[in-house]
Amino acid sequence: MKKIITIVGARPQFIKAATLSRQFGLQGVVEKIIHTGQHYDANMSDVFFEEMEIPKPAYNLDIHGVGHGAMTGRMLEGIEEILMNEKPDGVLVYGDTNSTLAGALAASKLHIPVVHVEAGLRSFNMLMPEEINRILTDRISSLLLCPTDTAIGNLKREGFDNFDIKIVKNGDVMQDASLYYAGKAEQKSTVLGKINLAEFVLATIHRQENTDLPENLRGIINGLNRINQTVPVVVPLHPRTRNILENLKLAPEFKIIDPVGYFDMIMLLKNCKMVITDSGGVQKEAFFFGKQCITMREQTEWVELIEYGFNTLTGSDAEKIVSAFHQSLLKKSDFSINLYGNGRAAEVAANEIIAY
Image 1 (cartoon, one colour):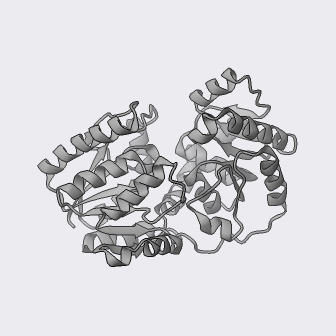
Image 2 (cartoon, helix red, strand yellow):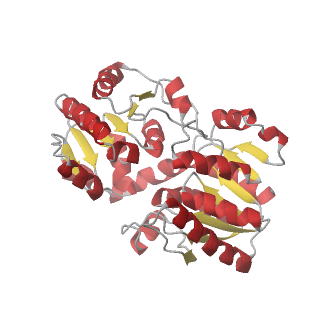
């Protein structure tokens, strides 16, 4: 493949895509990026692209703020038109968003090979829209780039050995990004001075099953309040979730800050005592920076973190969250184990894509 269309729809996907864009640039591959607009983000200004060394999108579809069906349908229509004009050798998609699925569908129906980065991940929870997106995207892809042995095992159990699809373990491009940007974060970030805490636990809450179900949110806030009595808790919180807390008359006793950019997030991860999250990506980033993680979900697609004792699942139950916190304080874990490629995932992926 010498001409690639990359499809992304959210800031984390841009950061992942940047790791491969750098490799493509080194090897003379022509890449054009389509930004679907799925997650509108005011922070994605020209400064964001310059600081992160990310190529600016050639196309911006500006599709956001509508339901799953309307969003995926509009993306499908917009992406198809671009692909018919550009005629790329392949289409590259990341992860498990509606943008991922729309890009894969548009390309596969035009008989353009689809490359899926972060293939083979499964939470085994079909109530999650992301799980549906992952499964469907994997099935209509031509090259599956898997971050872990677990991911490859999932595909084999689903019969992918019987399909005309190439499966490769390349590692996790998010580790590449974390290592690459860690030095820049030291120079650019000011967040530690703003929070002004000698030690703290970093927590994030954003999943709909936690923010939109009052009983789940109550459990999480209760658990974090209790942990805050032992170690200060810092939570970068979206304004929408703040409003929900106010409407439910929930009273956080911990420190709430505005949502942070990637450099600030890296510095919070590097300097915190522990991570408590419901995010898929933050679970891994905790590992990259050598921190124990508590995940406020019932399942995770990153099962190796559970198996090796770096992560504990608690759901939204306050008692389980507090118990996991005290147990995690006592753990002595070796974070040097190579679970995700040790920073070479993008290089391996780019070589596979170019050779395909």
